Length: 99
Image 1 (cartoon, rainbow, N blue to C red):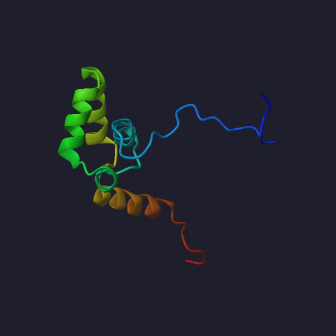
Image 2 (cartoon, one colour; image 1 turned 90 degrees about the vertical axis):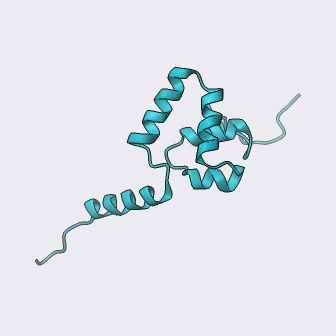
């Protein structure tokens, strides 16, 4: 069997699972840039349901690690994400010249 294309196929180490599946929900819950609102739009599960799903499917230590991450440094709500984005943009802004 030969290759059908001239370009090699790019392989990802951990490709994104299909949208709306349990694997995708777990993947999205671990991702820092995907908010609970976006998870709700795609899968229909609100934050408490995502927490229950994570509790059922993760090992106890992994669940505790995820909850700590979500509650401390992760930006899993759209309002917190937008507020943090504004603050980071303010820090990056260069001072005006000539003042």
